[in-house]
View 1 (cartoon, one colour):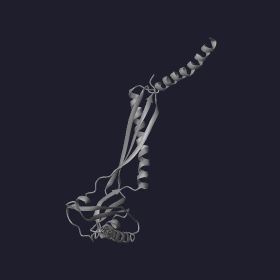
View 2: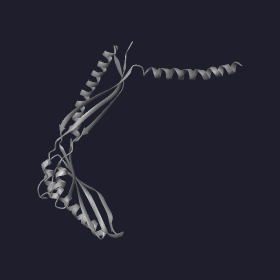
View 3: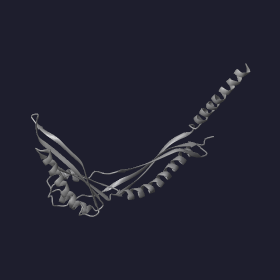
View 4: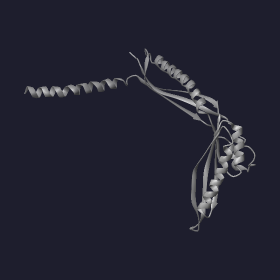
Length: 233
């Protein structure tokens, strides 16, 4: 009989510890407040991105591939002459052309991406490449090193704003202080659209003329979400 009682006590001991642990965890949720702070800064874009494509159509897929490859090799050779401009090709696609359910030929395309900080040079290069390629899109962004410097500055300001809100809430609720339970920091960059795309589609351009665009600005945003626990008597 004593052995059975001892076994029961052994089983009850971990259960009691578990109940106490759950109760202790639930206490952490008392007097908790969720806060958010946000800081942003407009920064001049310093990197230009241009997406172009070469298109072709032929009855024979081999002839189509030869034309697209020739146009792309021509474009890459010209792009390599411009120092400071990064050029990369990709996105090769071919698909059949049917008329009245009969295969009549093939169409294909391949993309070319240009990137760099010299807007004037990329604009001239883009104008030159439009002799054989078509511009699909143009956009601007903030370079990684410039963006990181701005984000680091905004993180400090956002943390100060978060602490200010925490003190404001604590003072209004007559708290003796607070502690941070958790905190999350996120960053983003919002790029306004470039109106060049609409002008490009609206009217034909002189293929030898450089592309005229304005880099504009991007909004770098740092958001802080967190939870504080107020010390309320």
